[in-house]
Length: 477
Ligand code: PXG
Image (tube, rainbow, N blue to C red; front, side, top):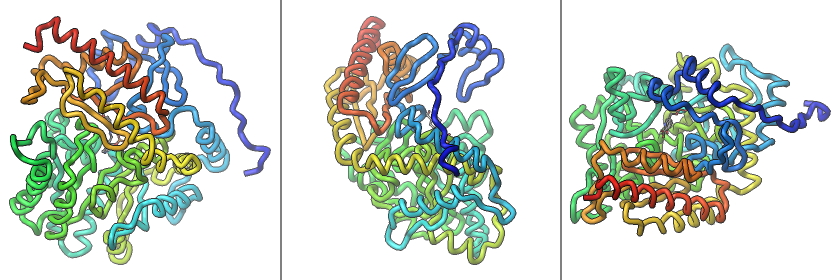
């Protein structure tokens, strides 16, 4: 690319939005994901117009601290011109070409090599190869295709079953939603598809026993995997899939004993291990990939979201050498791929994102400074009368809204207390995610100490307002 072709961003003219007209057009034509369209039409959608660093603005001029990084993805924050420039330059050079029919493109090759260098070696596992898609859901469908093809290539085509967990989230395609353990999703689509079964999640509030240590609880939950393998038949199981920390399920952080026990069991039966790091990778938990700190060695890693900080849709699967060697040496043609596998613009933006993170030493800063500060600040909420089971890990944190702390008692789910709290958060100026009784944050990794303090002040205020509501409605008695 010639230097004179460098793009200089013009001053952005903010378009004036007629909010009611835009909301009417929205409800007339735009069917939103995971949304009751009729209910939304009655309220009107928030029209998000622009964003900068860790803040978004709506068409009414309201500024909100985005403590969810969009949807767990805008890791480096909004408004980074380096990524916009990378997209512009790549669009001028080669906006699209496919990676089928003996073709490749420079950003896809460079990104695959870069990702391979970022994934830590885990024992004899390393990740020399990458398969690209445009999302986490597609990547998990790729995983299903890949593990079944792997076992068929090894002469064990009966090894088809994938074991996953209740309340996990692995995407919204038929494969992803089947491996996910969301009851509401299964009910609407006649899911899961055959060959996918579930065990419980390691969530102490739901499955813990009085008097049981965290350690023992972790082991007990992991051993459900062994029981399930034996029930299905060890020669029929292809893989186990799990998120290191369950994100959409409510930030479920497993006990330290959980993942090493899962590793012992998958090794004992020789089954593949898939680490779905769509949320947890790219600095979110203080490392480029999260598996190492949990003490396990995956064969396949799903990624998406943070790889481009959400600036472009991109996902993929890191293919460990155990799988790659079989597929490459013996598998022949893999009859699977997407039009946008290795999309040059998405890959160029991912490279710019990773370069930005490296220049800022963002992953190291998260690990050594920002995440420990967030953890301390978030922990100050533990004394609030509504807060129970408060936990954090890297740049994700969550708490349960509880009716009573000891013994821990949750509100009747029909009261939807999480939605009450979420509405107070929005009015106060901070975006938090509510998952049932759990309130969650996953702020941009670039958040400063001062901004963390402001965020915690707004969350505390929202909790106070929620408590006032709960008292007024006599929900606490
Ligand atoms: N795996 C994991 C672990 C995820 O968190 C996906 C796969 C699917 O990725 P795509 O790019 O296909 O959406 C995800 C996505 C929520 C929420 O409400 C979370 C996700 C998506 C939508 C909503 O917290 N995570």
